[in-house]
Image (cartoon, rainbow, N blue to C red; front, side, top):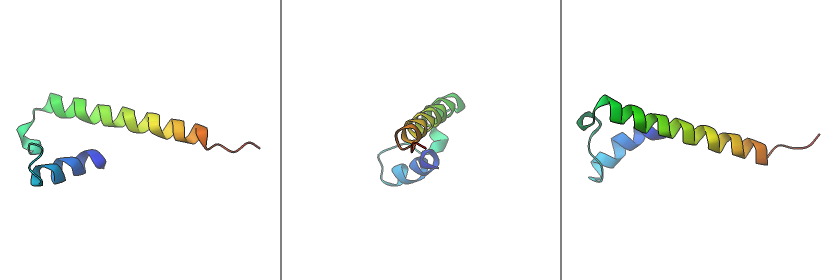
Length: 53
């Protein structure tokens, strides 16, 4: 969701190009980086907040 909202909000603020200005490969690479980052952050957070039984 953050990935897509960035492509909506940032062009309105004139700090990023609109989503249609990018080719499919660039969008794929950008999305995959966000997915990897989110997965790693979620895993680390889960590991650090895991309660002992």
